[in-house]
Image (cartoon, rainbow, N blue to C red; front, side, top):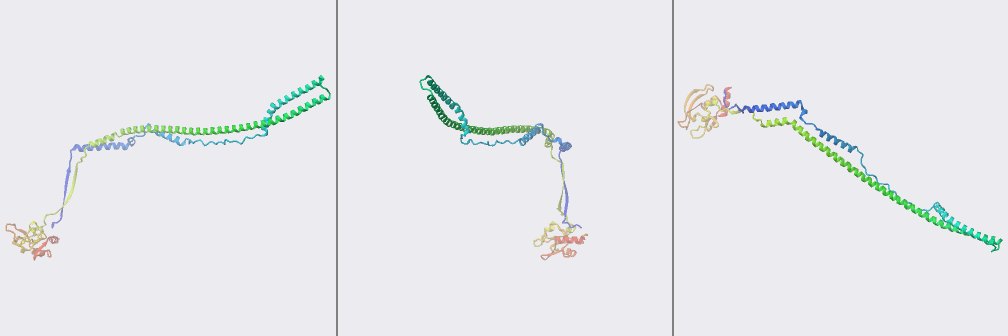
Length: 386
């Protein structure tokens, strides 16, 4: 026997429906998209545009430029020239140099002077011979003496003159040799200075040449890089255009999806549990309803109906027997609570005394009156059912 107080589970269903053409449009969009995906899976290589010709040329040019940079010999500035000291040894006059200068002097000066003295001596000797031959002077030993004296004087003059010429020639040769040595030293210094200047100039020219070559090389590299970048950019533009062509079906699918309704018919089911408000037979018999919960005592007070299932028969009036309940065996009565107007309808149920007899310990003493708590009443009903 159900005593009430449980829960009831109910299932609710709701359905949302849209026009059929909206459902067909969504199905069509799905079908188109599935077909494109299947084509993509079969031919994935046709979904991405590859490198274009200009891109490949730009990559080759950039690769060649990089290879030239790393494999070309490194440019180096010329080293510092090995400058020689522009200072020679001090000017020196050697005997050989003096001799070289003496010989020309003696030939030019000494020989000429000796020739002149020889001619003068011969003229003087010829004059003495003429004088003695003409008889103006005594011949014989006088002529020999005169001519001997002339010869001795000539010899002395020649010796003296040769000595003077040699002395003067030596001095002259020494001065000339010294001058030549100084000139040679100055010439060497000048030549060395000129050589150093030429070396410095050559080093400067070499450095400038290296700088010019480096600038030209950098300019060439910049041109090649600019050309490679230009080709690469052109290739990227071509690739983007090709990619847009390949993406046309996907773009069209996106547009189709944008105009396709996104409203699907749906059904929802939900379950809800609610308290079981139906009264059990025992509760009905005992008068457990809104009427008894609002009952008043004779003194105007509550009979604790919010906590108790029924009250003592001493709280009731106009009692009449109706018979026994077949399920509980309790005697049923019709009655009113004391203090209720005669206009109130009668209630039906057992007395608290009968409930205590049938279900011992189920009643409580409240203010000297018998009452049955609801929980005790429920337990008692369960025991009886068992």
